[in-house]
Length: 402
Ligand SMILES: Nc1ncnc2c1ncn2[C@@H]1O[C@H](COP(=O)(O)OP(=O)(O)O)[C@@H](O)[C@H]1O
Ligand SMILES: [Mg+2]
Image (cartoon, rainbow, N blue to C red; front, side, top):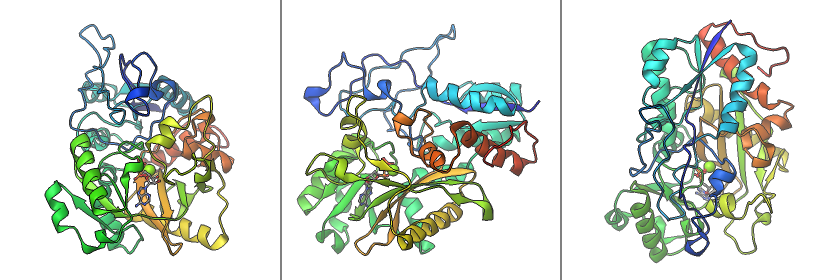
């Protein structure tokens, strides 16, 4: 039987974590959205202040993480996986061999070395720093153990939205014009284009809509300065300043490799479902505040309603991006149209969110379902692509999407 190592980071039990729309709605006695629903996107590096995830004490018991800041944007636990997601993935993998759970904590290298699985299925975010998503794959490479998904270089690259955009621009793949602000001083050297707002600003190393609110849409030099100052102070990392893309938004799942890589049915975002007057972006408010279990936000449509020419252009830009960045097995790529209707790449998620419950609106499983690929098949397809690359035989069930 094939021995499949399963690398993941599980959300710690959190006491006293506060999140909410704003200070008056952030009640310490309420479960944060991240406990009610798992909004993992698995693309996000940590703010420098992220607490250590040494999540077990000497007896091996899980230790509660320290309380987060009361700032609603500091939802530092948003990306890790819930037990429900981890169990669902493990259950899908179990059809293909013996599953060995390898939580990607500080003991991971030693346990991986001792277990020596034939292959590792990787959904781990990693623990520390802006390269943390690449740590598990790099450790696998160190021990010569094959793994699923993109390699450490691609994972690190995509965690840096500015470096990613540089590579896209070099390859003539449309992406919004941008510059990087490392300190407020840099604004003095801002290109003249910043006088011609609107702009969109965001932390260069975040994901899961962290640091993305209506304040990121800026229309004047004063708003730009205030917004940049706030993001620099809150996230302790450079701020990306981009031209605002005013058109429709889509997110696209990709499965497979080489010439066989294919774009799944496109997911469209319908911003008319946002409260009236809201900035048409998929930000913190849309993801965490306006979308509640009681009143789910009906923002996604899949397949997206889009004309044939635009659909072809989106698929083309997405596949070219996947290849140029060296993505493997699967990914999810965000796209928005510019004023001329040209699809621009917003960001790339080589470790896409894979929440199993359709009510959680996780877009890669959603796109797969629209293509007739169920959750288990999606997981098994990703594993199968990786196994094929490594020349490893799996006990794959009949009908797997790969
Ligand atoms: N240049 C831009 N123009 C318009 N909207 C943008 C731009 N960049 C990001 N957004 C909006 O912000 C959202 C979040 O940005 P994104 O880079 O995808 O961050 P995350 O990693 O949190 O998903 C996007 O889905 C989009 O709605
Ligand atoms: Mg995104």
